[in-house]
Length: 163
Picture 1 (cartoon, helix red, strand yellow):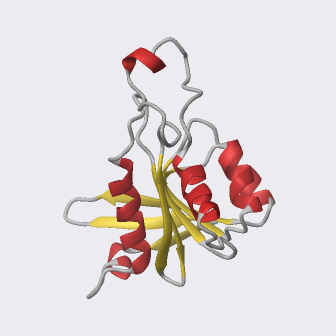
Picture 2: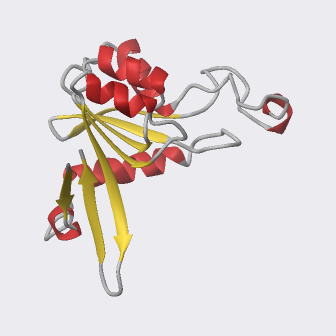
């Protein structure tokens, strides 16, 4: 089932908080040092940002670069953006129960497990990750999942979410 949201509904006379959070996730993604994929995430509750994250090396370790990531087919050092947002909240005692997660890419299976156990109730994403196993697990656990799609027409853009 696809729920469509027209861009005017998200923007209208005043930009929606959901769209602000998604734009913020895109902005946080620019902080990523991952050589393969830049991902950003925002946790929000009551329309307010409570935590953010982007993918990269664990705190205090060298950033990803060609020397320390090129020998592996897939980097094992990187912490995903969703996990970083959840872990930051945990580190500072911020409850994630009932929150919404906005992320540039759909969560992987490991992040999906953390999302479920963190009590996050809704996940919004823009792009699909290489596997949809995380999305399937979230749906199985009752987490509402929405894909935000920006489509360009001749003179207009449309945005719709997919549940």
